[in-house]
Image (cartoon, rainbow over all chains, first blue to last red; front, side):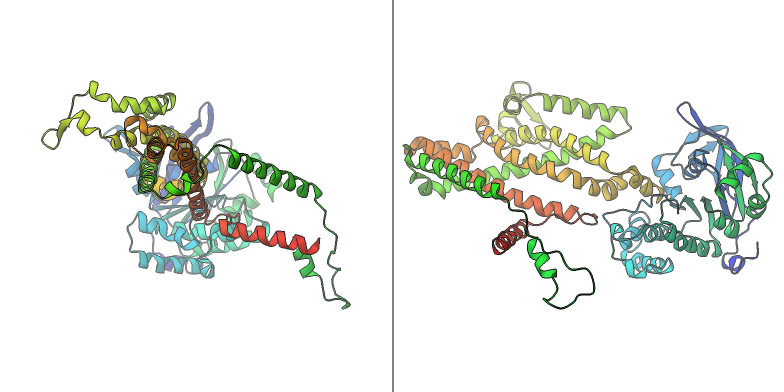
Length: 268
Length: 311
């Protein structure tokens, strides 16, 4: 499973380093504790799948990684740096909005509901952040955006508005939009859950292609087939804790924990 | 509608492959003819009554393009545009302040809206006009120093009075617009590394405009009419000039009709402008663009004629 074609030579990354590291991450919304101490490690270059029943906290954890949600306890690191805080001595300082924004540039995110900007064409969606945030030259950004749209199979849809695209096409534009910032980490929050079944395949193909190019990906998904084929690690979460983790093929075919077994018996 | 059905009907006699196109006699709306006749009768009666009255109608065309009236029209429009600019910019700033996480700014915005929405605009105009009783001088150190009464010209009084009052109303309209934009939009922008301000400017406000524009059109038209109040602070505009001419020419009531006609013309032109602004901000929307006034007129003409043909 580890010898994926092209994966090792495309991006020569040291896979022993942790891209994301969580130590006892807690998160509550008011009295509701959603994450009750998450410990896990996403290595550089791997495809890390998060599965679990709805309400298990997997999406919340994903949103904590780029600080869309603030964690209440524990430590969360991306590429060795603390998320949302700066540590000096034994004191933690909250980062300013500007500093948080700076770190988010390196983390791409794809949402369940796409969240494309409806008042911009596909191409404008893709160039928005490079031009506005990274101050890239507009012509260059456009050139690169066309390449990215071509990569996700939508070269001919550059001038379409999101409302003129199918769900699968919108999600692929959203992936291109995230890639335009050249992220070192991509977060996928149930990217195919809002799609018609026949459109899921196109999006998964793009994600598979991305995995083969060596991108570090954290994927919250209900697509067990994708997790088994493409994933390098898999974590089953339930009730705000990690119940079981390991290689996708092992966890999915031979789950050790009772809760994992009952969940998988329902979805497989 | 009916013409579409006729057009899609296949050529006569030729056996078509699919099911035969529907050819039905459309529902007759006799009520429409009756109401149209009644409405026209009432309109004619009203026009006749006004024509009979003791009003010297010739005075209206005589003064319609009088240079004083035209100056008044220009000043009314100028005042409307400038006060609305102050209102819209101020409204957006206040709305953003209201929605900010910062308790100080949101309280300030709340207080501003509370005061300016809670007092009559005419009272506010007089307040600005008489603020010289509180502040004798305007003193900006070496840059500018003057008596308040010289500084506060009638135009400035009118602009501040109307514009700052308008900002309070626009703030609520803008807040509604900002709240109407899906939260996922700012999340997506933040995830791309866009700052709070840039997200607002590039992503949220352009989408909020779809909600903001229609009530703002209302506000513009309201503002155009409210400008007639500023005669009270010595700034002459259309209504004031019309009154003056009326008193000098011995046709005071006629001049009110003249002013009303000009206000109607101006509000009509402004409503047309609103259509085009709405169309601009509707880009990317899944719903069809609202038709332009010209397209509407054409559509009505064609349906009317087609109804006649089939009737």
